[in-house]
Image 1: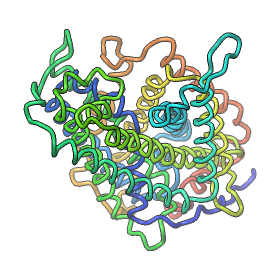
Image 2: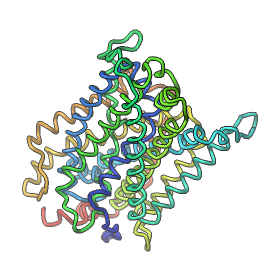
Image 3: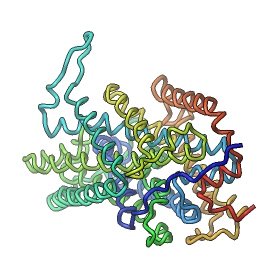
Image 4: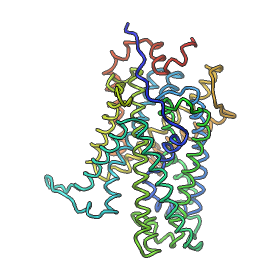
Length: 482
């Protein structure tokens, strides 16, 4: 039997602010610009804010489970390692593969969205079209999406330090732009414009609207979970215990961001007048101030948030694929590390190729991409929350720089939230239920692709023992334990 050899080490360069920027920047994308009107129409300004506070509380519980497990096993592709130790290679592969779906779908979403957002800032992009077989192709949008894919892929190819520097700079710019347009809105807004504070969409109750926002929370808070994919690349001086602060802080900061954006959109004009617009926040500020610079500030914040999310999820997806390849749960192609930049560059090529393909699908695929992404990440959330008590029982003496208080209760509550989210997507009567053929088709395609890769890599997968696989996947951290 062929013995495994340790994979080339990833560079250890990330510090606390880099981890925060990766998490927060990945959470705040561009979707809020489009759906803030739907949020307001479903529950009203106060209802939306309460739903986001409640959902943030649920996600913090999940985040604390991540913090304990990531400090206990600081290896790339954390969810894969946790599930492997509790449930074996098949379920570890399943959790990892669906989490890859969640991350890749977000990368694809950003590739499709970039041209659309920049089209509002630079209208000439909307006029660049071409007729192919009687179909109008938005050449400007496609070109921007392809250019963004090349840019993000190239940055990630050159190393985690460059990618984290870009993430940090863009996150700081995002804070600045948000402070400008939110501050202007709050300064000039009128409290009377917020009425009614709580409302409901036609034919629904306000509680139903708040519940819809609550159960789709992984969609709006996913991104903090990239930290466990990157923790193997923490600087030697970084204290892993800090993750117990960084993860909840990134979630809390995101909750405040969403609440401020909702209030800023609703306070400058009567919110019912702007909620139905294509980009409500940009429209409200343009109409209220009778100029375009503040609306351009909103659009720029959306574009910057798009890039931070794209960069973060590209980092996360490539590390997940690398971890699956390193454990021989995927073909060896994914486990290759660049000899100079120490990046999983072939995994990056796979992620970039899928993003390139999505650019040609157009805007109709945006919401389905986000929905299947949230589904894949909710599966990973469930796997992590169920793994915490199991690993405590199996490895009670394993060092844990951070330990979740009342860990069993917290993990059960977090698992319940993950199950609620999964049910919201698959139960036919749910307001967030998947549709056919797009969402279910994407999910079926990904499941079949995963099955083909699993069967096709059987010889490679069985060329090492499970003991050797554990050594490679966990980088020898449990070799002293039978």
